[in-house]
Length: 567
Image 1: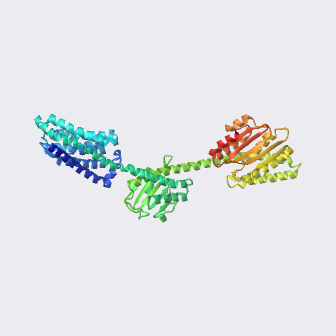
Image 2: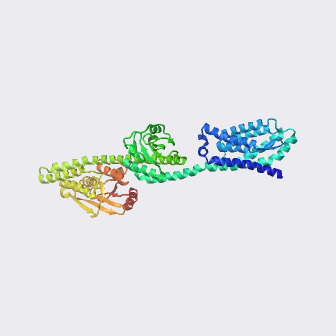
Image 3: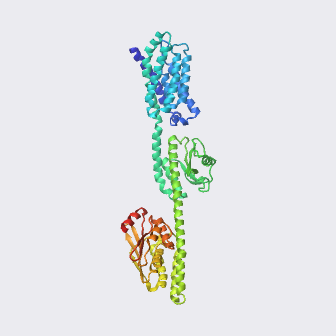
């Protein structure tokens, strides 16, 4: 019993030595780089290097084994299983073949040489299967069981092949327990190496958090992309990752450069380097860790990450360091994550700009449709007054010219509501010249209202009330223009006592269909919808019509406000 215990300690002693060697290997940058890569991404040279390492461990295990009646108590199987589980089938199988062949050749006629050769290769195949088919979290447990199974297979083969049988039985009795129990070391080795491998996930999480922090800081600058905002983005990135310089480019020029060497570049007109052009063409990340830039020789490390929009490379993010070998795995992970976020932000920003441009273009188009309609009515009013009432015609010309001048002098989409009311008053002056005492207009407007709205937003509603409401009545009519403070904004209402709108017209406007010849009404409905999220509220009265809308800074709240008012 003591002898068996000593043999077991000898196995653990050699396994511990292998564990120590692996521990120091995991501290080296090259080996850590191998561990941080997925198995599918390892190059042939990297796999050859790992195979050589574990083959040496396995051969060392054989050479350091304890001879027991022609057999060896060793840790060869532990090395084979560990290599295959950690790095895949090629490492496991080749290590098994090499170490198994070595074991066979050093004792060709020994009673255990052939069984050891067979189980060495079997261990390599089995470890590769575990690597591919078993969940990573279970590798160490399944590895222990597989190692014990391989050592058990060795014992069975020794009993079947050793001659005489008594020799084989004696060998098994002495080495079975130490070798089978010693296979538990496989779990320790796998856990040790995986602990280093799992560091990449911790690094990735930490760097992802850094990338998100940077993204949050830079987000306001993506709302209006220009040279100044891009420079601010570069400055934030440089400060947060302690870089020496950061640049952003498009496909042709450097758009922003902040940091060491900035004086060497003509921002916005500087053409790209051949290295950057190659990165943009290939769409692959470029890393230089011990190089010297032609324009800025003080810089020795850089990473160039392509920026994508709608599946195409539209620019790059470039990070520079003066010291060599500063582009580490963790920095690369962070830079990739940041570039992906930046690509999304830039794409969203450009989409938002295009959407705003489209909305503005649509509003201008709608507004331009209203102007000819109003001019037609105004000129008719003037022509009917020019002989009988020249003074009135002169005043109407002044009203019309002032109205047109307001439009020509507009420098922005929005004007003060009071200015819009001046336009309405000029229009009403023209219409009252046509209708005389038949038309009465009442203004019910809060004194302290101050808000900007698009021009020609209220006038078409007044025109609709007069032309399609009052004009069709035989008697006199009243139009009430009401502008009041509301809990959700400012409520605008144009109410008349005229003929009254029919339900079909209300329904067609709601469906964005042209309601007969009421082009002004539909256009205002479109524009209000674009601006405030909810179109006109049209109600038939007895008598007359009430058309209203809510001016709000929060379009999402419009619907609820309108529903409550209608109720």
